[in-house]
Image 1 (cartoon, rainbow, N blue to C red):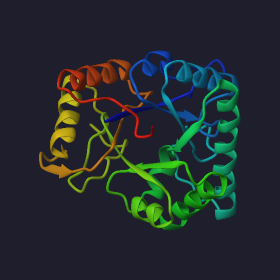
Image 2: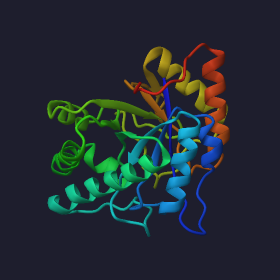
Image 3: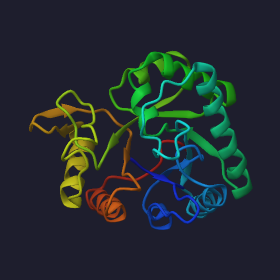
Length: 250
């Protein structure tokens, strides 16, 4: 199973997360591209640290929304969205080359991630952007979302993702961050939930029912309180139970 985290999100004097510690735990790093978070020097440092630890790098593309951390819904024109995604991937590819590594996949961030999971127009824009700059890039998408089928039909390789530190609805969607209990903090509980996912393909929803989730990668948000402790507990539990941690790309 792949473990991923959102990294490279510090901006100037504003610090977000502990990239160095997370890179010792995860197998894939979703690195900010400057639109929702991240400055060039910080992004480059994160890429160099990922290279040193043989962690696979992905482009964490987003709406152009620094003030909202990319979590505000936006109705972006297709021409702008396609170009914005190409721009972000290209910028990260350049920095990755300087760091001695390469960008292997794309994981949209925040509101863009949630929107394209269901919105076919914006999903098509992101798909077209990836195909335009590098069709070999893997798209990481929310498990169970229509986006997965759309992207595969368009010729992209897609990896489905589950979230370790988020609550799920009975329908298999993420509980909105605006609702109480949407973000989980109990590392022991989280580790058990994810072990159940790996072994049985299900996650307990907020109503106690078991929802089927087919996922090849598990995300621990780098900006969550206790993120490093959660990720470390998850990895330790997996290793103790014989679950191998490895990226979805060779």
